Length: 88
Image 1: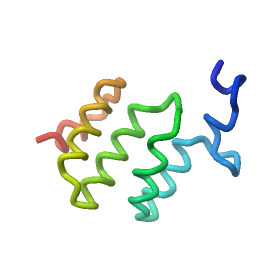
Image 2: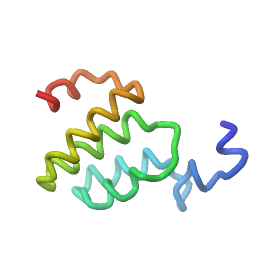
Image 3: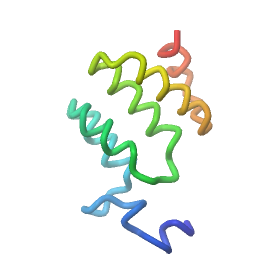
Image 4: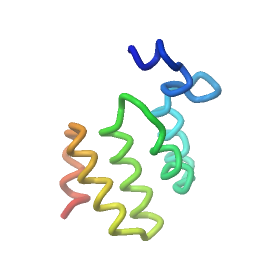
């Protein structure tokens, strides 16, 4: 919330979507390179964003980077059981 008060552009994409929503939309459309790029933006949803980054990197066959993204997702508290399947 404080981040949004200081710089709303860091939390919301240009069209009013949150960074997470923008990344989810790009992911759903198969724009994996955009997911990887946008996942570097500051946000309060880092856990899920790193998870989506990992899946996108995996689809781009960048496996070592995907593994690091999944580990970061856990570090930021992402708890979806699918992450453990992705790590195996």
